[in-house]
Image 1 (cartoon, rainbow, N blue to C red):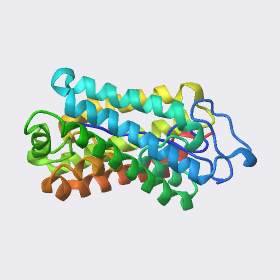
Image 2: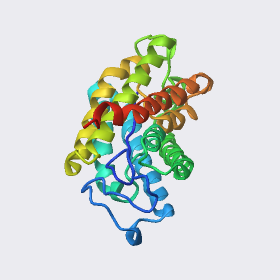
Image 3: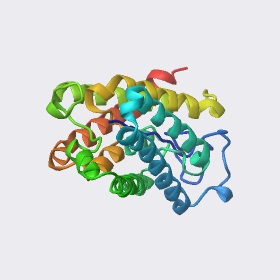
Image 4: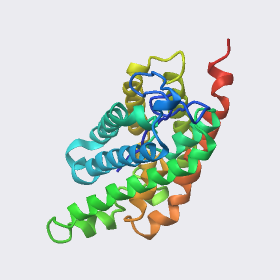
Length: 269
């Protein structure tokens, strides 16, 4: 029923990295590491893969198996909690983006080297796909027809029109996804920047993602994270795949807006 993700790298706790590929910052502590101690690209990609796996597994698992009891609030809390946990765990390695849109925003803002963007995104997509594949394996052990029922209902995929939980149309979904992704990336860039409180950044990021889900689960089932959308669409049937483009394009547009405008809006002296 929903998910989104979170994220960050190098000089950030969840969505930012320094311009230099040789320096990085801890998501939990904000301390900059020297060139000699900067994690390797392989280590950062493993961290991004794991963090995205954790995020998707937590939120989609809750949406599929527990939402009838927890409702939208439970799903929103699940995504916020998994993001907080993931950033505290591996944010000091990769920056803790766990979301292609966040990585795009970080690169646009000059906090992630552009040459690292494609590897980050591929790692995030892989982590999300592993998560939903494991959820499929779990659901296959349910009562007769349980997995088929989940897939027939879209497997918690994002959608518009008849596939929107609240019946919202394409334009409404695009606006919501762009605006909420931009807000998310602005918050991440702010709390992980020089004026932010790095030790509390994961909490701020997780809470922001929680309120984003509370707003937009009824609208689009909440993406703001292309890796999450891909992860569910591959098991959500033809309609989920047909509508997937919206949840690849809109979050990236929102991230580009946020990354390009952050310093002009919020770093003016």
